[in-house]
Length: 478
Ligand code: NBP
Image 1 (cartoon, rainbow, N blue to C red):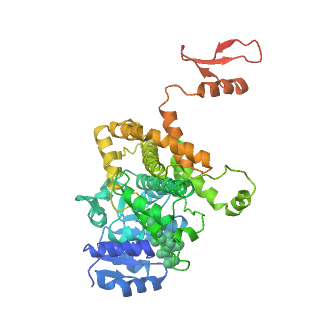
Image 2 (spheres, helix red, strand yellow):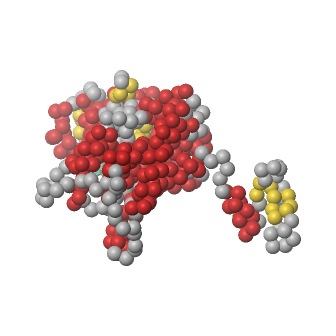
Image 3 (cartoon, rainbow, N blue to C red):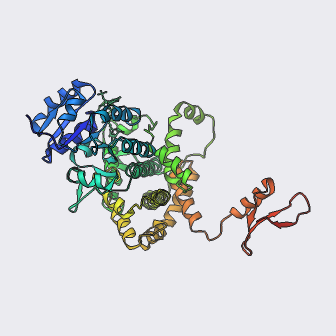
């Protein structure tokens, strides 16, 4: 009888196949299965030589091929397919077996599946995997959520296949239930903001700076040697430098300007609204994608709605440096907001998230990997109860130093009619957050006028209402 496999992977589309290959390359024995058998056969044909795989046609054979207690990684399309696979697997499994959902599941689904599996005597883990197909094969960032004891049993595999930075695997137990998928969701949301900020920088350098795509590509290449050093800045340089084989011009110039999305950014924004966390950068990035999708409407509006007359920038070198600083400051704000959201979720759900560790496991393998994540880890190591990243000296100084350039960029973009929702909302957040007294006193006054919603006074305890349309007197209401 063949040796039983350490771990199983069901779902052999690009992500599952690459994760299984990564595991086998690290010396683990891997059972593989796919709903459509032809994909399993093809997988064994293509990659069977890379490691110790056992391919199975039926789920029963797949389950039988595993060492007990079994660990089964489910890597199928997020949503109903995950439930379908759990329903099919559950009757074939034994108490204590572990089902790992490594897809992009929504965290409430993970909480629900964790409870459902527990009722069946099974252990369920929801793990976030970032890095796309390349990461899955060569080392992703892994965000495991679920029972810590179950994690301990599979940590050898997960830490071995994860990316590794300075000898530290980009994988650590995140928290119970849906915590891993939650952190992956916010990671994706931050990715939306990062990408939107890069797009706005490109837009400004194109339409105000008058620079070509390859020229901007070279600028991004330079930026990647400084504070902005990151995977996304690096690949922006590469994408902008790419020549289109058909036209001989820059490839980006012939790509339609409609951004698609799979939903994780939207989930992050919705969750921020539910939690009451101001998450302007990510939310504006989601809205910018939805606005980009209205291509027909935009084309009609472009010949109807007035904008300012075009005028070139007076000093392009200064614009380039201002945009670099605005990009950095806005990025700091986007991360500050994302981490504030994770902190709020951690408190609301009792997850006890180690936010410094989250930044640490994002340093390698994932799409938002960046030098500056080290600074976030350091910030939470020195201030574990930090309310907002902007309040640690490194970031306070970084954003403070950039603010003049940041304000000039927002003014310039506005004067030139270039939409910069992420740059400007980040700056407004910064200005709103640093205000000792904002204008919400008037909001409360208005709410009290039209709805008797009451207000609090700065000079007295309690809730008050003014009888605006009666005698105008103020009454205490609590
Ligand atoms: P897909 O998301 O395209 O899903 C395809 C897989 O799901 C196939 O193996 C398919 O089997 C299986 N499947 C479906 Br669809 N319905 C099923 C059902 N009812 N029962 C059993 N199997 C079913 O694959 P992917 O792009 O590899 O992504 C997998 C997961 O990883 C997703 O959650 C995705 O969001 C996440 N993710 C993807 C990336 C990326 O870069 N692609 C990055 C990070 C995370 P079949 O062959 O029989 O149709």
